[in-house]
Length: 239
Image (cartoon, rainbow, N blue to C red; front, side):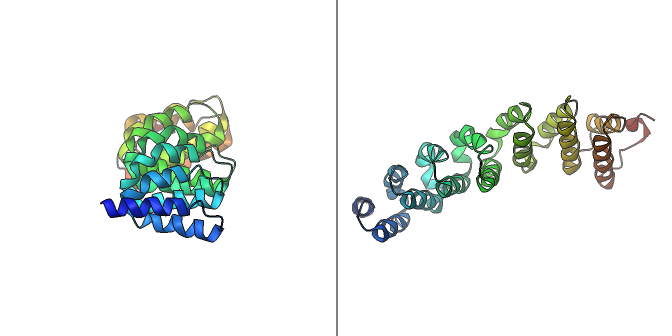
């Protein structure tokens, strides 16, 4: 209500106090005000003090769903020069959940962040945000960079609701000219334990691959599928 808005405005002023401890306490206190604090915390993502920027992102994450108006600001914060700010921004977007779908392109870029923690949190955030990011992740996997493929794969595999789309993506990747990408695809199909005919046929074909690591990945994937499925038979193995 009005009192919360007045308190939020006063705390926003305190975020610019010359004393660092006062600035940090003000950011923390704003989180207690919920929705009324969101505009002030969003602006705080641009403050000079990196501790204030990180605290603002953390506080927006604590507010959760009601912090959805801050999503564009948090997406920009994913490019912050300070790794702590980038981490808190990814966590905040995860806590906002599906309403943070507009940040998906920025989160996908964060899968290439130089810091491994940022990459990991970005992957988890993409999974939590849900299905609107699936096609973007599929496109990223098809781009061909193995490191990015691995990060995008992690995010996509966590989204169990999209098993059919995910399996189709990795069946295609299993045809890649790059052996490491084929290996990644087969490992992922094993994790998914998809037992449709198309996937089983892909795994069977991979048993004849010229690369021993790819063949081993196919064997392990078939073992994983076989534990789940009663549909695996000699026709899938080309026998």
